[in-house]
Image (cartoon, rainbow, N blue to C red; front, side, top):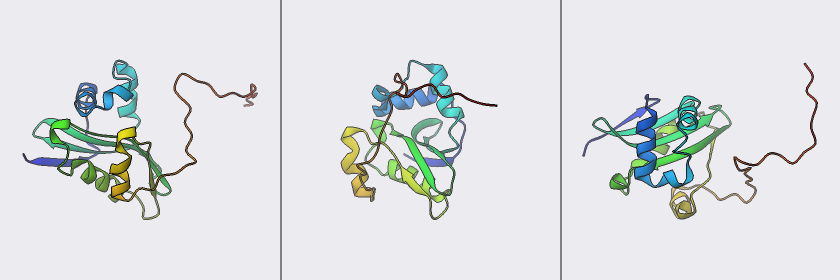
Length: 145
């Protein structure tokens, strides 16, 4: 096994969906919505990928301003390649692209809390999410041009 790493390499929807399935992350991602998956790829401004030949075996997909905050929205490693440091290496590559004061933020899968703690991430009790199917509970706000 000779893993090669790339920053901001192009990937296809099919490669991404295949990796999400092989990593187990597909159960928490809209893999049946190809348009959404394409948007996830197109609008990420920082990715680190791991390749075994032409096969995508890992990805760290992020959105960042490169100075203050970087949201690591996906960390997926093919189950056959887990446990050998690929996920950690992908996160290191992401962090290397960021300014020295930029923090990494993520929402961990329930089974991954121990993994992130071992890497030095700190749990934060003040995280909130608004699910995709819900809308903000607020009065209509007029928009002026």
